[in-house]
Amino acid sequence: MSELFVEGRGHRPARSLPRSLPLGAFLVAILVLSPEGMAAVKSALDNQLQRTMNIALGSALSTIGLTIPAILAISLFTGKTVELGLENAEACLLLITLPVSVVNIQSGRTNMLQGVVHLVLFLTYVVLIFD
Image (cartoon, rainbow, N blue to C red; front, side, top):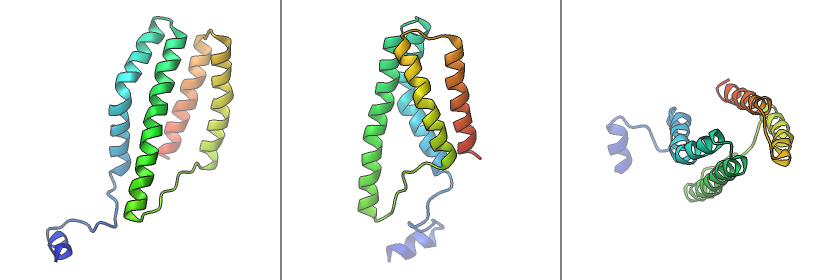
């Protein structure tokens, strides 16, 4: 009876996902990461590399560490499969980003060129998301 009521009111069945799901997930990620991101930017402007790295990496790690298990638990509960994988181009970007990050962290000092390299890698990843 409830399926008839829901479908009769013009709602899509529960099996289909809305097309705005990636946009909604993106907005939630911005909402969750923005306070720590602003604090990291302020620390970077004050030339405090260690504090910047601690805030930015800690925020991202805690968000990912809480979000992925929650999504997996929901997928188990609903019976849906979740694919947590990277395509070849995204995996290549990850493999490039890791050594670039190691160079930045080990030196203890950064310059504008290193920051630009990270921004170019990030923008490349964003372009690949919407490609």
